[in-house]
Length: 172
Image 1 (cartoon, rainbow, N blue to C red):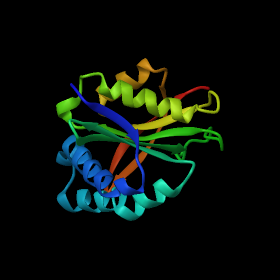
Image 2: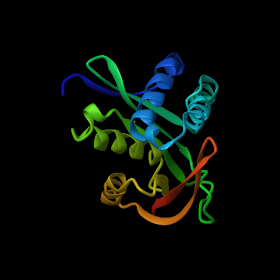
Image 3: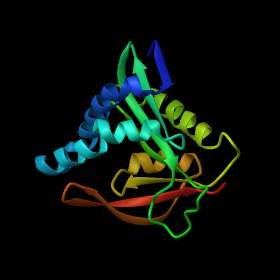
Image 4: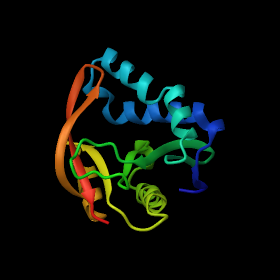
């Protein structure tokens, strides 16, 4: 794969972030949900208001992954807001990391994940968290390779559908 760029996104990227976010989530999980639930979730999680607020928050960061000039993935990180009693004010969270299936398996996911981890730990090592769908075993294996382990679970709402999501943690 040539000409791959992982870069911090800015306000000028809101539309691209919305498009690639909707596309990658739908490609990965869209088949699991009734259309109205999927639409409700996408409009909230990848709406321009949400993305503008995330970009304006200095405690959060978004990345775009571009290959051959087209957006093929994205990531979001910031303070942890997962429902676990051990989450503290300094805890960081990998909130989203998605790539189009056409670029998965190329090592790009690892590059993106390592970029996000480095940003989260830019001021020193700390506890890091993430949520992963309970049936996404490939992602769980990937996160375990980076020292993340399951420590809990919660319900993740996609519209009216609630999925079983695992909470993974890596101690700082």
